[in-house]
Structure formats: C-alpha cells, structure tokens
Image (tube, rainbow, N blue to C red; front, side, top):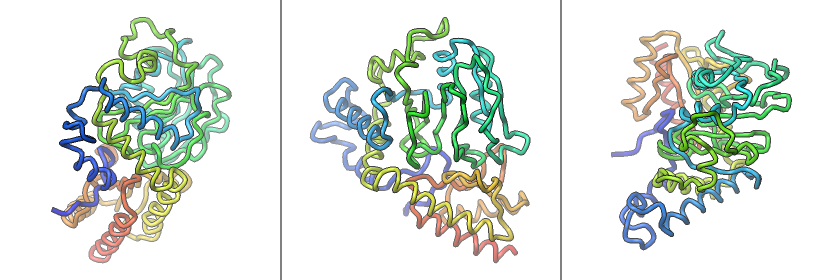
Amino acid sequence: MARVYNFSAGPAVLPEEVLKEAAEEMLDYKGTGMSVMEMSHRSKAFDDIIKTAEQDLRDLMNIPDNYKVMFLQGGASQQFAMIPMNLMKNKVADYIVTGQWAKKAWQEASKYGKANKIASSEDQTFSYIPDCSDLPISDDADYVYICENNTIYGTKYKELPNTKGKTLVADVSSCFLSEPVDVSKYGIIYGGVQKNIGPAGVVIVIMREDLITEDVLEGTPTMLQYKTHADAQSLYNTPPAYGIYICGKVFQWLKKMGGLEAMKKRNEEKAKILYDYLDSSKLFKGTVVEKDRSLMNVPFVTGDEEMDAKFVKEAKAAGFENLKGHRTVGGMRASIYNAMPKEGVEKLVEFMKKFEEANA
C-alpha cells in the first residue's frame, strides 16, 4: 500500500525518514536489545534520548538559559488548567479568544479566578485576528493568554499582542517549530506535539524559571505543579517515553533540513501554492482574512455542503486523506505541517483544479 497524502490536523503527518528510522530501531535500539517502548525511563539509554531531545530543541529555538523545557502529558488541554493553577496569584488573567481552543482555555481559567476576555474574533466565526496593539490589559492581570495559530479556523498571529508588561502565555500547538520565534517574549510557550512534531501524548512546555514556584493555588495536585516536573527534569513520573523519542528524531530532522529559518521559507512556499489557487478559483474559497492566514492550516469551502462532501469523498479516493473541515465549521481544511512535502500540496491543487473543471 502506497502512503497517502495526509492532511490531518493532528495526529498528523510525520517525516518519512523519521518513521523509517524508528522502524529500524523498533526491536533493538542502539544495541540495547530492546525497543525504546520497553526501556526504563531511568536507563542510561533513555537518559541520553531525553537530554539530546531537549538540547536539540534548545538549539532549534535558541531557548535562553533561564527557561526550563518540560516534556509533559495531558495534552494542551491539561495546560488550560495548569496555567491558572500555577500562575494566577492575583486570581486575574486576560484572554484573547481567537478560536475554540483559546475559548476552552478561557472557560477553564474562569474556574480558578477572574478570566477577562479582552478581545475576541468570535463575531466573525474566528476568521481574523483582532488588533492587539492597545488592549484593555488589566492592571492586576497575572498573565495574558493567546492561542497563536488556530488549527480549526486557520488564523495566525503575525505580531504578538502588546501585553503592556504582563507575562505572555501562548499555546503554539499547531505552529510549533514552523518558523523562528523569540522565546524571550513569552513567559510560557507550549504546545501539544501531535500536529507538527510527534505522536499524540506529549505536550512540551517552555517556561521562564522565575514563574516556576511553590506558590500555586491551594489544592493544586502535585502532578499539576510545574515545579514538580522542572525539578525532576520531566522524570517525576514515567514520561511518554516513546513519544519523546520520536520528537527527538523530528528535532534532528529539522536541524538537518536547515533549522527554523529554512522551515519557514519552505512553509511559505507550500502555503502560497494553495492560497494562490484558492484566490483564483471560482469554486473554492478560503475563509480567512488574508493578512491573518496560517501557514499550517488552510480552511476552504465551496459554499455548498453537498459539493464539499463530494469533494472530500473524491479526494479521499484519490489518496488525499483527512480533508474534511472541523465539525464546528464544516467545509474542508488542509493541514500542511512541516512534514507535508511540497509535492503533496502541488498534487492537491492539481486535483482541486480537475474537480473544479468537472463540477463547474
């Protein structure tokens, strides 16, 4: 069976050479006589895996020394609670709601204190990013929260909000490692890895050390305190060992590809192929304001639900998988993460053109 072009939003496409390498090492990792899946997280072999993965990530992102890297579990959704539990000292936080995940994070934070929704794009089905240059930041806010790339709606912050000196917390699940970032602008930058980095089950949290304290909300479980994991170097309990191993391989692949500058260039080229076609098509149209378009997630529609369904069905038969849009918005969505080859996007556009001609 040939591999398909997988446009899934997550779990998503991984680099083929990473998968091949993992397959070769499946039964015997570097002469240990066992799989990484079977090995103790306290073993020398795994210690090397996790330390190398962290160092490679630090290199790729130029992570400053005063930031901790944690490989955790529970996905981005668990961070929605962990963040207020650990950071809401004044019981106040400001949220910019640009999609379903930011909205869920805001709702979760509301359980722990006053979560202010200081800006939102819900009025236009999250199809744009609001102007964040002069927001009503609360004087006593403990942090300002954003979801930087909105997987479902296909929007991306091109400029970070002006937080007026408050700590910025960002969920970057679906744009993680897609372009260079200045980590020092964030208090916490985190993401689930299952979109752009690895298999589901790992969330990476990069956090400024001064924010990691024992001063957390009363009743916060030990496992939900960042200090627990930072002090134990992500080994307080059994970590998602195999997932971390694959992430490490992806970091090495990214280095080999030329790092994040090279990925950004590649991603811009890929996205341009698809957006240029959508802008010229009479049948398909993109749903996002042009200046806020994501390089990673491209939603589009025909304006007719039956036609959308027909397209998804025929595309699947032609080897283009997971193009159905999120259930909350319908239509189609092509997620074109780092590991999606340019050829996959070109072939998709070719297919869309044929479909358009046949259904004009």
